[in-house]
Image (cartoon, rainbow, N blue to C red):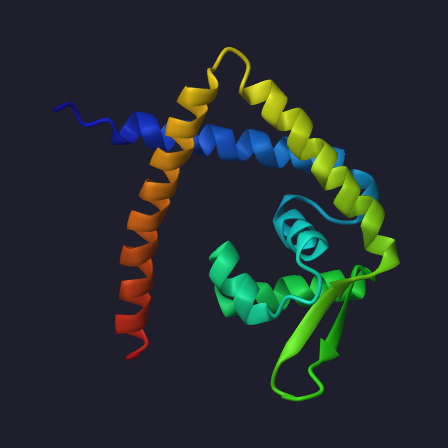
Length: 153
């Protein structure tokens, strides 16, 4: 079998760069960009989510999430509420100021999806999504396993 990694890696990289440019341009009026849009959208869809839930769902490390929460708090997009029953647990909510940005993110998603799916059948898109998910799961297991070994967990 031919080694296709260089082509797959190159296309993933191109796709990633183009998405960043597309989202950064579409969100320029909202003080956020590609790096924060995932979190704003997640909280729009899951108000009151905990940071731990976001770490597990978005597959990001705690340090990165902490920086993003700090940034979004500074721009007035989220508020952090301490759980009344367990003070160790925090819940994250979008502020009213963040709602227009969240709606813009949804519009950008729809437009971007329509653009990249042109000429691709729904069955092909489903297969691509399943394949990318499996690839991400494979890499995720390897990366997190190594991080746990490195940190002695």
